[in-house]
Amino acid sequence: MSTRQVVTDADYEAWRQVRIAALPHERCPSVAELREQDRPGRLLLLAELGGKIVGSGLSDRSDEAGRAFLAPRVRPEHRRQGVGMELLFALARHAVDQGYERAGSGVEDDGSLAFAQRFGFVETDRQVEQVRRIGAEPWPAATTEYDVVTVAQRPELWARAYEQVALPTFPDMDVPSLLNVTADDWAIEWINDPAAMFLAVADDEVIGVAGLMLDPDKPERAEVAYTAVRREWRGKSVAATLKRMSMAWAAEHGITEIYTWTQRGNDNMRRLNEHLGFTYGQISISVRAPLPLSAHRSTEPLPGQTRNR
Image (cartoon, rainbow, N blue to C red; front, side, top):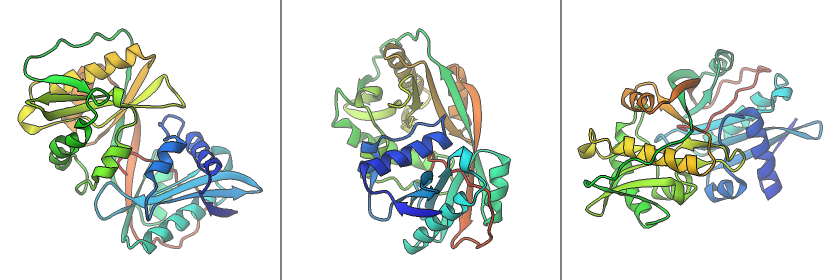
């Protein structure tokens, strides 16, 4: 088996196809999005076996401060051949070279968790998927307390939303350490269609955000984007209104299902989603390990996740 770095558009598309095969229920960034996300220290790998691309990997800084994110993935039909292990160690070595002393990843089942534990990973959190079928969705009534606009209507507000909503609400997320999301990350990775992102605005200040991340590979399905409301506006149905707006927009644009991932301790968001008709789906297990990884060898793969990196 050999690994090589992703360079060409064809490489990026091959990387995407492995990720889609490994995580068929998850939205995958497009080639254009992946190129836009490139930055110093970020590494994308392809793994080849017998002349075929059978695995891919990502090593990058995490959204959580001071930690690397590792995501080795292997096509299901090529697992248990040592590909995932080789990718994992290559990604971990890169993270060490970038100065990281801790790394995280995500697994979806107890077998993958047991494999991760052999290399020093321990479980730190569990997230639950919440899913909502989209039918005939009415637009919520307008309110006099604030206006709702899309980022397409007022694109200058997205950068303002980072300062006025994202930064004040990131500390409220139930994650082990404060999220480390830059303004550039916010502009590139946290939105992919301005028409599908809704902002609540009062006195020309952004007080809440919610919307959808569209999936060009599965246009009938979309992921719920970051949903947050400034503390002083909570309890006034701002988040529910914004989510209902995005659901009505989804219905008008041929989307039949939306989904989101919610941290174990975020009971308020889970209850809101339940109130809006979301049901429960899969579980994702977050794992963390010190770097460098143990050199123990195994033939089991370690699937990776991209949410809450």
